Image (cartoon, rainbow, N blue to C red):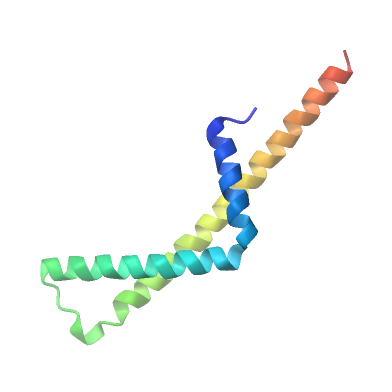
Length: 102
């Protein structure tokens, strides 16, 4: 039997899957890179770190990091989704076999 949290995850991930991996990654990579870049610039400014000569490295590092995080999250969520679906199907088959045998 799936918990309420697992059922919510399945609904959420089914919606994400409808858009496809490419649109998921595009959205999260662009938004994540933008947010991470702003945060890092703010932190550098707060601590007085001078990065004028290599200013391009901050967005580049943010882009690479967020790309890795987003791709890993997609794979992890796909794996979790498939495990939950397999478990749900398996439990359904066990219940069906159990009730037919009585």
